[in-house]
Image 1 (cartoon, one colour):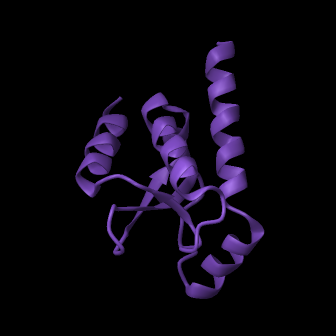
Image 2 (cartoon, helix red, strand yellow):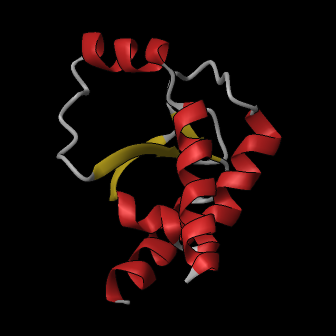
Length: 104
């Protein structure tokens, strides 16, 4: 139980740092604030053109998704020029992971 709560706390902390007030402001003004409650938008891709996904926040607690968050932190830090949470992996890998997480 303590391990799960620590993992969730760690994921929330990473997410909080990456989604600053500046990013929220950019999302609100760009018309992309149509994220349902309980979800978060992420940008996925290894090229300059990234695809936007809206995922449930419950995914943030899964250890495989936390590995992706660690990759994002290593590659971009917490001030990415795209203005959102960007995951540096292939779209195919991300969709397979999201599909597996939605089935569990």
